Length: 107
Image (cartoon, rainbow, N blue to C red; front, side, top):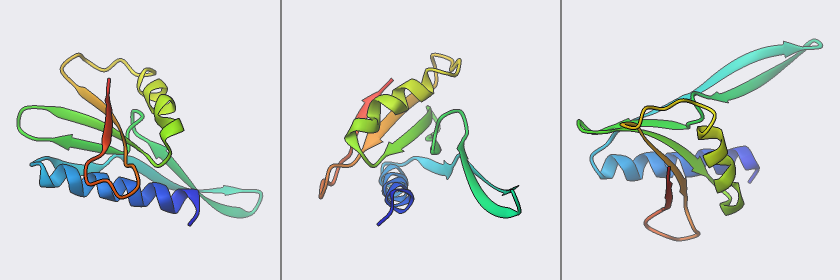
């Protein structure tokens, strides 16, 4: 499984887990097609550093889902680039193998 496929699997797992907890979740990743030197390439860009955007009637949550525990700090760094208001929650989520609950780094 390549890195992109593993990341998509973890993102879907995170989305389903959040929905089971009562959150309404949407992807916040932009997929564009670009042309470079006569070749077509897919470009993926996270909006405001997040893979998912979730709401539950009380909170707004931006989620970065990581497939490798060493990437958690890069998710934290990505969120720090944007001036989020204090009322908005930001989570970097990582799933350990065979765990039913994710490891969450709350920012």
